Image (cartoon, rainbow, N blue to C red; front, side, top):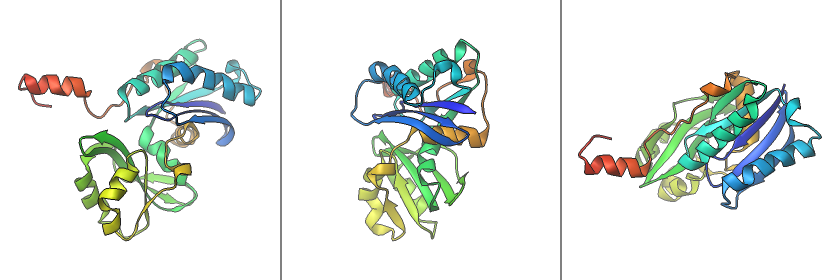
Length: 232
């Protein structure tokens, strides 16, 4: 199966083509460029590198969140637009899970953490046994202090990854002996990780059913509800 995968859920963006789990071509940018301007040229680029056309793709996948509200919407809309012509199947993948797949050849726990601002992170824990990834908890938004308490229960190597990893490491990394800050080369979510996760989870559905997974309301809406005295 040839899968075209897209990630635009944060400042970085990437597109990849994978066939039966093998990476065929990939484009990754971490320059905080506007995704609406760069994403489709990246799609054209990876297809050209692989000597493929869009009609050669069997299925699509996209990171549906958590992450940037605008970035997620752009990625989801792009994949729906690519899939709708021939009604090809699509998979929505957790951005945090795609981060974990950067460590699939390690034996460790991956703490994927994305900066949610206000001293909070979007996070989830995964275990890698060197050949597969197992989810240990659901995606959630928590304070950095609560995350520290959660991962302190594990007595094994833990890698912090994601754009919130450095923030967490500066907060509590020196206090926990088994916690390591991942290297830049595998810290961020990649479209290839999304493709492998989608293939392993086999969660392909109709493109019309793909929807963002934000975890919490946009900041503007939260502030509006607070002013109205509503619960958030």
